[in-house]
Amino acid sequence: MIICIEEIPSVMSRERTDSGQYAETVTIDRVRQVFSTIAGPVVTSADIASELGVTAEAARRKLNEFHDRGMLDKRKTAGRNIYWLQPAGDVTDINPEDPVWGTDPITGDETVSEADIDDVLYGEING
Image 1: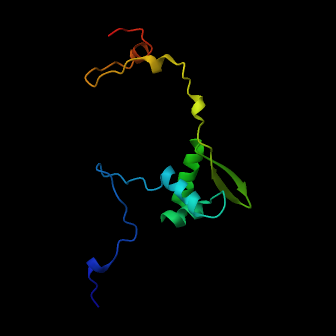
Image 2 (image 1 turned 60 degrees about the vertical axis):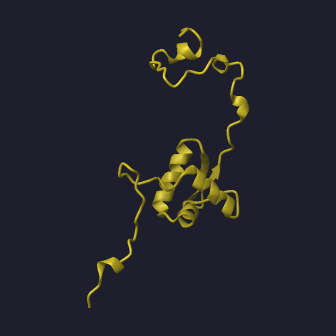
C-alpha cells in the first residue's frame, strides 16, 4: 500500500508571523470571548483549550501569564485553578490635571531623545 504524503493532514499546523515565529493564538481578547460563551463566571484551562483549539498546557501557561499581568484572577479549588476576569481599570485613574494633557502634540518629523521626553511633555523645553 502506498500512501501519498499530500493526503496526510498536518496535525498541529500553526500560523507564523512575518519573522517566522509562531503567531500568538491565545490572546486576552479571545479568552474574554470564552467567558461570554460558557456558563458561569469562571473558566478552567480545559475550557480555554477546548474553545480555542489549543492544548491544555498552552491554555494553562497563557492563563497564568494573564494572571501575572493582572488581567485575570485565580484560585485553586478541588485541585484545579479557576480563573475569572479582573474588572477593567477605572477611567478615573487618569489625572485630568496632569500637565501632559495641556501640551501641544509633537509633529511626526520631530524626534525627542528618551532623556528629554519628560521635559518636552511637561513643557520645560521649548522647541
